[in-house]
Amino acid sequence: MTGEEPNVRIGDVSGSTFAIGSHAHAESHHHGTGAPADRELLQAVKELRADLERVRSTEQTAALDEALAETEAEIARTGQAGPTRRERLRQLLDDSQALLGVLASAGAVAGLLGM
Image (cartoon, rainbow, N blue to C red):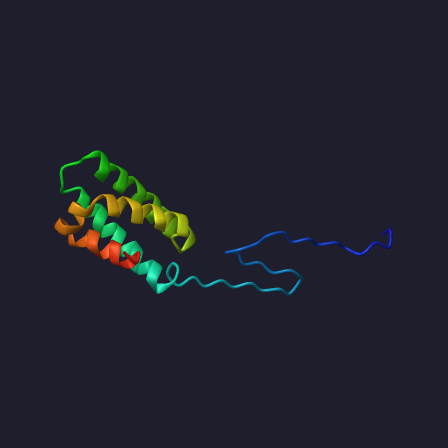
């Protein structure tokens, strides 16, 4: 042995569990995704996507469905919808005011986004 101490470096770690040492024990428990508001938004997004399948597709509804799918994936992956994603949904819902009046699920998503 050269007399050098062992060296351990841990970079950016998030959403992970690890243990170091001969008797180390790591345990991880995941209970749902994100904050209650994000879980509620995820449910509302899913409901709106299901409702969009029942209306005639337009450029607006296709763009909204795409943004909703991206939001759903982001919440499922990270537990939250980021500010940029939320703002994009706000814009698309604002552009689809007629849709808000027809689909209660659109109104629910808009309400959760603070519109």
